[in-house]
Structure formats: C-alpha cells, structure tokens
Length: 339
Image (cartoon, rainbow, N blue to C red; front, side, top):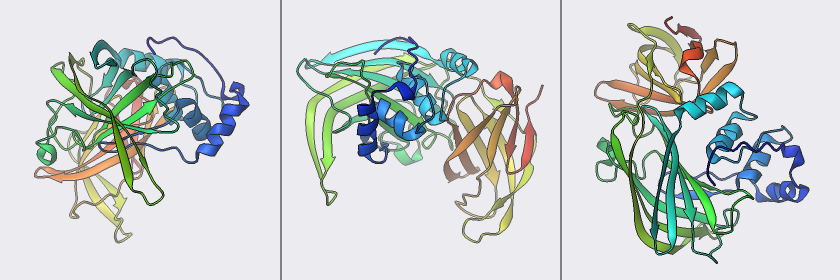
C-alpha cells in the first residue's frame, strides 16, 4: 500500500458483513512493548467510531490518526500530517519476505514509522485471526533503562494493519514510539541525523484460554534501514516557573506543583515539574486551543523521575500545526504561545 491517494469511504457504506464481523471481534487489541498485536483497520474504525462517519484514506498513517481522532481529519490536519511526513521508501528482501520502510513522522520525543510487509506468494497474513510479532531496535535512542536494547521493549508499540485493498500476503506494521523511552532524556528523534532501524525475525503467536503462549517463527532474518528524519520544531511555553494545583492520586489532596518547562511539538508535549512527591501522576487536564478555536486533547503518557527532576509526557491523537496554536490550558492555567 503506497502513496497518499485519498479514498473516501463513509463507515455507513461499509459492507454490512464487515460491520457484523467487527462486532464479533470484541474489544480492539493494541500491542505494547516488544510484541505486536494485530487488528484489521476497517474493523477497528467501526468499533472505535460506531455510527460516526469517518473517511477511509487508503493510507495507514492517515487512517490511524482519523481513528484516534474519532472522525474525519480536517484539511488543515491533513496538511499538517503531510508536512511532517518523510518518505523513506527503502526495501530489503530476506528469504522471499520483503520489508519496506514506507514513511515516517517524528518530533523530538515521538515517532511513527510505517513498515510494509510482503510475504512470499501463497502465504496468508491474517491480522484478524493471528497476532504478529517481530523485534525492532532503533539506534541512538538508548536510555539508562534500556542501554542494551535501544527502545526495544521500552516505549515501542507495534500494530499490524490490513485493508481490503491489500493482497492476502501483505500487511503494514505501524511502529509507534510514544515518549516512554525519550521524554526524560535529552535525545532528539528528529534532529536530522541518520538512524538505523533494525527489524528481526517475523513471528505469529496466540494465547490459549489459560493465557499460555504458543509461537511460530515465520521467517528468521534481519532487515536493516538507515535514514534521517528532518528536524522538527519545538516550542518552550515557559519563561520561569509556573505553579499549578494537581490532585495527589494517593491522598486525593490538591498539591502545589511547579512547572519548570513545558515543551510543545506537533505530536505532543513534555512537562518538567517539581513536587515533593515521588512518581506522582497528578495531571489530567491538558487542552491545546488553535487559532480557529478548535481544540486538541493531550493524552497522558508516562511519568518518570531523573536526577534533574520529574517529567510527564502527553501525546496528541492527531498532529497539530504549531504555527496555529493559540494557547495551552494545563491544570486550569492558560499558557500562551508567544507571538
């Protein structure tokens, strides 16, 4: 599945048999850590949006953001995603299995990398019935917690998608690095430097009723790709410390928290803060307001503590145009973007 051809298709127009099949799937499964759980994209959209009409774009990144956004993407959102997207288009074939790094989006602490997978003719990749798995490492992003494995197993989420336009031996794996491994570090994913993405060993696995895992290796091999992601903009909203009130999840009390840094990118925000409590997760209120009055919510990612203080990350369901951000509301305090 290549290119950005926009194939619009309302969910109301989907074959009723597909809607029925989606209803029988149960909750949508998402993969975390090293393992890739696999879902059908069209069915996931039906489950996530219900009767709400949503565009079908024929592009995994666009469809993924539309699904998370809960509806169609606006023209401005589509333009923002296009401006952030780097087309890589590198392929390698091992034992008849071709893996292609199609495209990627990255800011300082977030990245989405799209891998096309084509199996030998006669192989059936069935994401609705099977879970697929591979090992992935991204060079240059090792942290204190993952010095031996880069981001593998730490903050890397993998999901395979498939739509009806693909052959039976085709699928797309979307790699998502969601700040867990990078928010509390000085690493920069989109700094223009070349990084190496290594994909190793494609597998299929399942769990029985007692959660015992059985696994089969589809192909042993290593696919390696080296490419640079363009530098991405980042805005610092604070000039000094700003105090906010936040609920202490362990006591239920409102506590003073000092914000020392609030960095905003197109894909999310990183907040450094000072509090007397260790590993507190008090934040539940973040809204980005655009110049046209529209809003984007920030989903809390991960809290962590380092020698320099504490960090909390937020991720947006759809990329935002930083040039159109008016202000951010955080724990009831409005942080204005400098003009």
